[in-house]
Image (cartoon, rainbow, N blue to C red; front, side):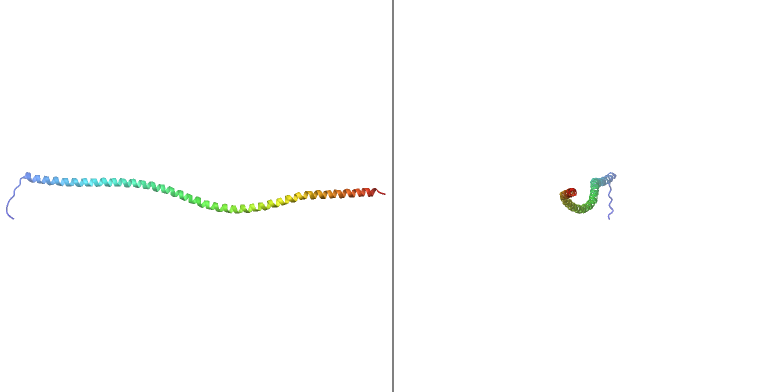
Length: 147
């Protein structure tokens, strides 16, 4: 090193220091501006996430309601299956009753036809009996009175 002495005025040194401080201040301000922009973007994204979360919550609530409906319909469906089976059993029993009813109607019809024959038979038998009684009475009266 050489023994040279450099002299600067205090004003020059303070101006240089002030310039460096200004540059550092600008850099810090720019970085804070960038950080503020990032926070703004993060805030916007967070708002979107909150809105999306609210939407998802509504959809989940809607899905819960639909799921409850489906569960209720399944319970009803199971009940409907049981009712269908019971109705099927009732149909078979009804067919049996209808078959027996048809048999009874035929039997009653046959009896009514027989009843229609019974009256003439009874009338004929009564007529024959009355005729026989009259004949016997006439013979007794006529024979009983003859000498």
